[in-house]
Image 1: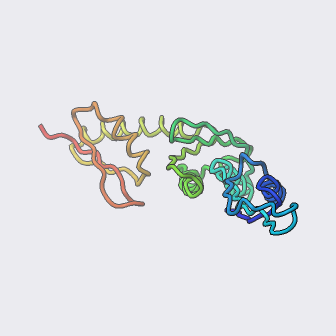
Image 2: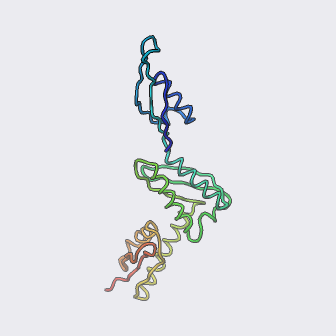
Length: 207
């Protein structure tokens, strides 16, 4: 957080000085008046300069975008970023030529980037945001894959009469599995283990 103290013959002049030093505009700055100053006799004797403290406001979305662009460039996959906000959920949609590098095996790199981006945005925000990071429509494709996997393994659990354990997944992917099988009365699902190894178990319901 960049902060400076500036002086001037008037508060207005002190503010102008601060904005010039910060190279920004008033709407992006928090201004605190420390001393309104004093003109003095004939504008000279006993005069006292106005003193203000100016703090540069940090845009959490801008910080998150800068972070993503920096990391993607370092990974050799520079991106363009589109931001969509729905209440407290923020979607960062990445587009570029080498998105596979950012997605990683089963989305592991994308999930890690999503977690780190959420830390960045909330470090600079007064309210908590949930970040969803997507690249090349990966989340939709992964959702469809998870639903198909859930249905296939549920059939296996019913057929064999044995529990089926899935691979470890992040919480929102486990939720996809739970939701996909919620209406299936032949099985039940529960999560087992501790993060990052927490996984879903599909268990046949005994009649």
